[in-house]
Structures are given as structure tokens and as C-alpha cells.
Length: 80
Image (cartoon, rainbow, N blue to C red; front, top):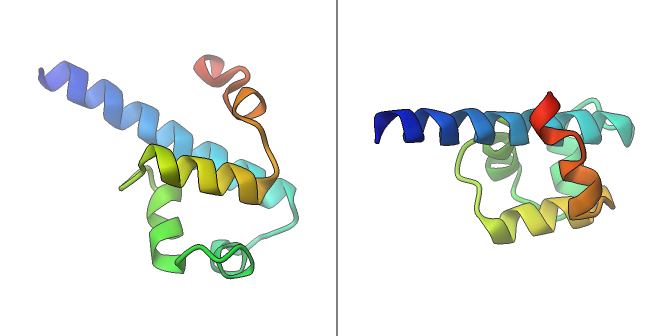
């Protein structure tokens, strides 16, 4: 079970890194400004980029704010 938890934790960190990459690609060097502009609580979004507290509904909301489809977001996800 501990190995499974570690794998999930690694995947969540990768999700956070992907959020950060896409946010910066949209021209936001600061996560707080991105969160503010997209009506996402800043502290909560900061945790998302750290791979914490992420739920499916939150993932959907952030991808919509980034104007990215699930397919685009997860493209090459396993390779990174």
C-alpha cells in the first residue's frame, strides 16, 4: 500500500508541475495573479501546483482556466 501511495504522490507532483508549465506558457510568471484572474482561490491554486489537495472538479476548473483540454494536458504525461 505504501508503494501505491508513493506512486500517487509522484503523479500529483507531476500534475502540479504541468499546471505550472502551462501557466507560465500563458504568460503568468506568478501563480497568484493567474489564480486571481481566473477566480480560483490563490492559496488553493498554490497547493495544486505543489501536487496537493487536487480533486477532479478542481482539475477541470484549472484546465478550463488554462484553455487546455484533458487530451492536451495529459499528452506525453508519462514521459515527463
